[in-house]
Image 1 (spheres, rainbow, N blue to C red):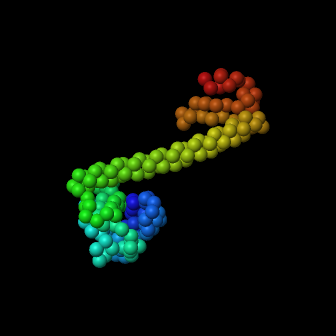
Image 2 (cartoon, rainbow, N blue to C red; image 1 turned 90 degrees about the vertical axis):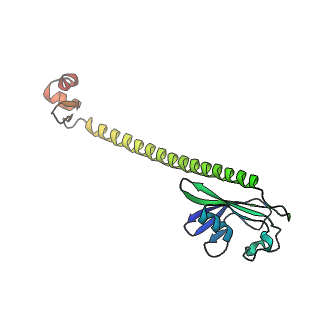
Image 3 (cartoon, rainbow, N blue to C red; image 1 turned 45 degrees about the horizontal axis):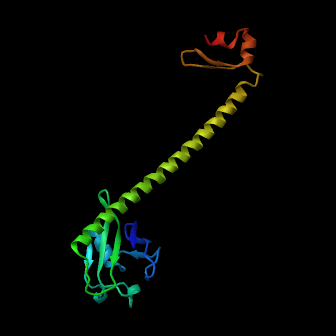
Length: 185
C-alpha cells in the first residue's frame, strides 16, 4: 500500500493491493495506530519487522490476516518525508533481504518523483487555465473598448505619455479634417 501525509498527524491510504483488510481511504492518526508507518515517516528510515503477526502493536484490522514480514519504506520528497510504501509477506520465516529493502527504497524514490511530477503537471494545467481565462477576459475587454471607441458619436484618440497619437477614431478624423495616418504621424 501507499500512505501519504495529508496533515502533519494524518496518513491516508491512497493505493492498496486487493485482497487485504486495508482499503483505499483508510486513515491513521499519529498516536492511534500504524506505529511502524509513523516510525518510518518520523525517522525517514525503513521500518522492518520479521514477524508482524507476533507484534503486540499490530493494527486491529490485520487480526487473523496472515502478515509476517513487513517493510515500510518512507517516501522522501526533497528534504521531507511525504508518506510510506508498505510491503508485506504472508508466509512465515521469509524476512525481507537487504537487496529487497534497497529495491524498495529505489521504488519509493520513483514514487516521490512521480508524485512531484503529477503536482507540477496539475499546477501547470491550473496556471494555463487561468492564463486562457485572463486572455479571454482581455479579448472581450478589448472588443468592448474598440466598440465604444469606434462608435462614431464622439471624436476619440489614444495617446502616449508624450502626447503622440497611437489610435484615432473616424469621428475625430472628420472633426479635424485629417486621415488616421496623418494624425498618427
